[in-house]
Image (cartoon, rainbow over all chains, first blue to last red; front, side):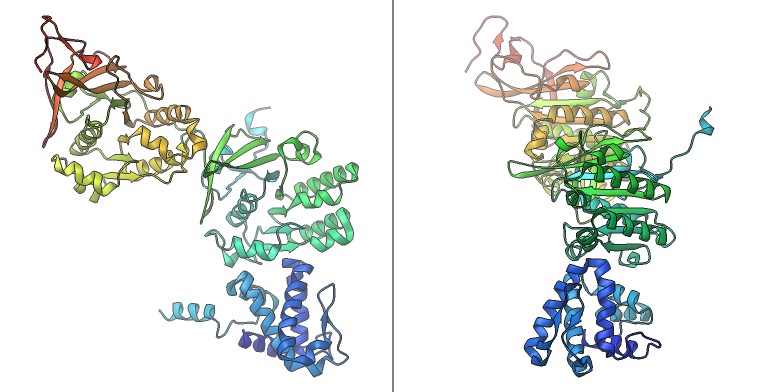
Length: 136
Length: 492
């Protein structure tokens, strides 16, 4: 999932004309996921997942303690999110892992592809399966 | 107005095996339906099957989730079913959660959001799960509920969507609830625990525009989702096979003679007798005789495994192994202890389709009854009636065995009071003669015409059932304790 998170961050960084200019790409990805997953699993469902992911990351990266999840599922609490960009990648990885634990990697890939059509699930088990099939 | 002027109602496949037949061909397009029932009875799974069976990129489905089962969990569990096609997600099926909308903006907000999504996607199918939680939010205002349901029904029908509203309703709510008045179709799912078994049934309480099969139908939930078993046993609409003049051999010439030339094709024959009298062996002769004539057959057994059954037939020189390998014979072993008769018949019908079988053996009815969930045993006699009528109606000749508790004062025909269900009855029994237990056989009933009134002795040896001569010179043979006609006491 770490590779997936990095791929999403890279794609977001290269997306032109994004409205949240000062926000690091990783948090823009999380914001995009908030919109997408709130439709799919509800605001409460997304908020629960992100809060759990954040709690797990805070153990590893204490500086993330400044952040908290608001009732609508967005992240809040840091004046300068750019400071947390690296830890944000860990948070995104945890969020994707949690999501995959609930609904499976395959469904997560569908959601991510819907989120970013240019996204290809490189390095995932699913990708490797389809790659093998095409080689055969 | 002639027939061609009437609007044609298209029928959509439900994706649930057996349900289309119960509905009279499928679900009416653009209908507004409710799936009701208690928690865990399969409402959400039924809706998912319908959605996955019908949604396409051109005709997508919108699945609205509201308060109730969390959407995360619903997606987690529903993807376990084989019908869940990941490639349909988002491009053909969109899941949209409206819980927060309901909390923040109430029924008006729900209607606005559904309207917005429907206008944007122009869906073929719309599901609201759970609709009951939407209604609970507005419990104080009956008028508000009425208006909401009216508007929703109008919106979805005008957008040509076929709709399912899912709710946990009690049967007592049917009369007063405006939702049920507006609905075109009402599907009620039941789930009861009876002793150690779960019995699931569904009823089409209401379906506008077409005839559905009335009554309660069994259904089962497997890895493939729901499968329904119609009370008509998959045979409604089929034309009954015309009456055949053909007689089928039992594989024992003497017995064929006693039957007036064999069993009329399409009859139901009952072989009744106590343990060890050779009922199963006679049934094996019957199936073997058909196989020798090139007729495929099916044996449904409940008391022993197929390998044992086939091996035992071989010890009497009756080869079932070869035709089984060649696909001409199917030995079905049914003993899960929570079957319904309808499921059993479905399996048999599938086998008939597969093999083209014309002969069918049920060995035995007592074992069959034991294999049923306790809740279905109460209806066993009625179910047997429907089953036998259905199977013989398509030209299958059915032989059933039934174990009889032996009485030495009278001759019982059969347990279950099912003798009226059968066209023909052969009775096997023990008699005590001169200190030995001997076996006698008689034909009690042949609906198709004359039959022998002899009481013949028979024995079981390496050739199977071998019928001997009439037992003459005795009275009261059928009671099991005969007397010599000349009045002398039989020697011990």
